[in-house]
Image (cartoon, helix red, strand yellow):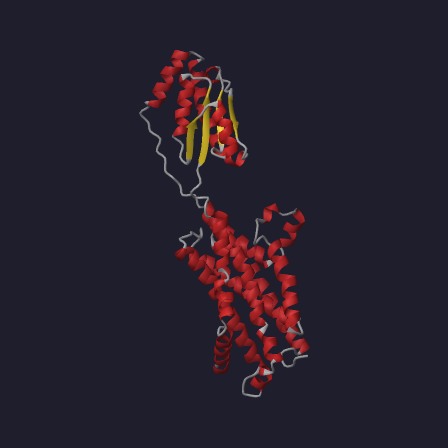
Amino acid sequence: MKNVLWLMKKTLTVTFKSKKNILLYLFMPMIGIIVAFVAYGDQNSQSLSIGIIDHDRQPITAETIDYLKQMDHVDMKVLKDKEMQDALTSGHIDGAITFDHGYADSILAQKPAHVTITSIKGESVTGFVKSMLYQYMDQLTVLSEAADGDTHKFTALYKDYQQAEFQLQTTAVEDTSVDKGMTYTAVGFLIMIMLLSASNLAEIILKEKEERTYFRLLSTPITAKQFMIANTLVNLMVMIVQAMLTLLILTKGFDISLGVVFWKAAVVMILFALISVGLSLTIVAFSGSRNAVSALSNLIIMPTVMLSGCFWPVEIMPKTAQKISEFLPQRWALETLTQLQEGSKIGDLYLNFLILIAFALVFFLIATYKFSRNNNINSFS
């Protein structure tokens, strides 16, 4: 054990003596957080700007416009036809609602019509406003049906509706979708960095052999087994520190909610750290030189990272690619984290955790078997 600890200290000292390695292993994952902020950072402050054109000029139309003006995160502006076209094309407004002549009559006839929503940005911008407007129009239609189309009865019912004794209390629910999206993007980038870092750290095994340091170590009481254990533990330590540092900076530094208790997210990332180290050892076991490690790492890591949904949602990929991603550990790590964010309990995700553990065991077993078969641990070709 003493020899293993000495080797770990030596490896850590040599590795982090270089400032480049400190940036690579400890601060490179921070780029993922920056990317997440660029992608999601401005979405919390966004509000819609909607123009309103009233051609009907009836009390019911005025009540509808007043209702729309009370909506949160929507800035309503009363415009004229000419102003609307210029405002839309210049981007000063995101959309426009036009109440044509006959809107109030259509409500009284229980056939809502004569209202148009215009936007050059599409349904994603105006969908919220449309849903709220249509819901209000439905309420007016129900009152009109009760009044049987009589304007005076409708007016009386509407006033009673506004002055009803019962009150609807609303509570604002915090929108966590942006934080979850930022977490997903940052963790996806972190997974890529962990795999690349683990591969670089495992490459130290071949570097020590190329420089003949490994053989000088074996001339001492240190054994090949101790050398491998020390390298594996150092690799695992760095991976865990990378993951924990990224999660801490997300939560404490940038006040981003993970959408899940910290220790649960940490468990997922620690399991993936084991997978990263196991895969890196497998790559080294099948490589005869450091150049071969680099080539094999690039061939395996980048394509699987992209296929597993680390850079974009898996749902947008072709069905064939989605099927392939189900055989990749990155996909299972992200899927597990996502399900935890959605409220699933760890006990409910036992299969996910078993699959992550199975990936780690398989990689370690393959690496151990390959090292023992080709004697790669005791000689360098």
